Amino acid sequence: MSLLLKNTTYIDWQSLEFIETDILVEEGEKGTIRFVEQTESLNDDPAIIDCSGKFVTKSFTVGHHHVYSALARGMPAPQETPKNFYEILKYIWWNLDKALDKDTIEASALATAIACAKAGSTFVIDHHASPNYIDGSLEIIAKTFEKVGVSHLLCYEITDRDGLDKSKKGLTESEQYLQKHQGLVGLHASFTVSEEIFKNAVKLMEKYHTGIHIHVAEDLYDQQFCQDNYGKRVVERLNDHGVLNSTKTILAHCLHINDTERDLIANSKTWIVENMESNLKNKVGYFNGEGLGERIMLGTDGMHSDMLRSTRAAYFVGQKFDNIDFESAYQRFRNVHHYLDSNNFSGDGENNLVVLDYPSPTPVTKENFHGHFIFGLTSNDVQHVISNGKLIVKDKTVQTIDENEILAFTREQAARLWKRMSR
Image 1: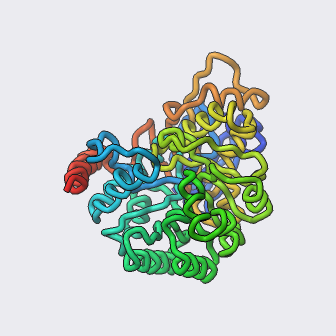
Image 2: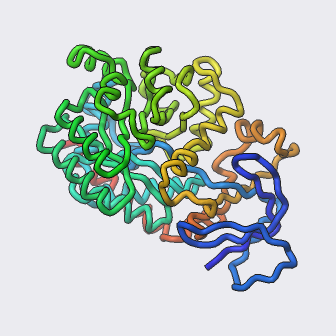
């Protein structure tokens, strides 16, 4: 069924042209949008949404997320206080992901999909880990996202940190998923991936014509380990394995890299995803895009699901540590669409829209839009969200599932997860 958005102020997400129009939205992954005259007769009888006084533009996308962290909010402190980044992983996140099972994965995916949708995102690139429930974990997430109405590009985080058996299971899960779905081959980070698993992951990448999704030099530990054990830096190791050859490869973080590594990335086909708030939380450093080229996008790293918030953090912190302005902040925010489109991934077509109720006290124009984007717009302004032509959020409420019922389920599963973590 098609939708008719009446009386809109449409903002073209690339040119920032403002167009006063009605918009006919076609449903489906290959659906389109069409500007129509108010007097034009339509062949079908579309559902109508009055957008008077509202702004309509392309919806948002999360460039790097972690479904597995969705039930962490408010959880008990770790049994040991972490003293560095490696211990943060060991005592908090690796403890949490080991405790995940079928129901807690589903609850995590539900919580993530709902939060993303209500914050205006209709597509999520996720990097998942559940070492004690690997088989079928990606299918659980995929089906759950689709139930809410959020498109996805998933991968399983393959790693040797839990033993060779688990890393092989991660490879198997990745291949089984890629046989049926679009996806990536996930690796945790260089310091937890052996040469054998690296080679096998790249073979899998090449077999399914996809890319690697991996954390890169998030902390100095990653570089030190790589130099001590392989006699090279992290990006050099990735390059030697052919990871940088794919236009679909995503390198997350890239904080502690030198000029040689920056050149390798800039001259490659790969993409980088910045996650400023997570870096601040973990006290690992600050992203700097200097010398990395234009293929930089933004993610949340599982901190939350609000891409407007992530962009604002990238801009403000970047005033001291990065070369970023209004325009480049917006470009990084939107670059994920270019990544998906240039690699022919489905689910992020032009019929993915967000309706913003943004009653600004000052004029909003093409010329000053970037200023409103950085200093004004928030996820609270998201009123309606359309995913693949389907209305999935109406008046700030998810339409595809019962939110209250789901929240009761996620709270129950969060309590179970926390108990399992304390064993």
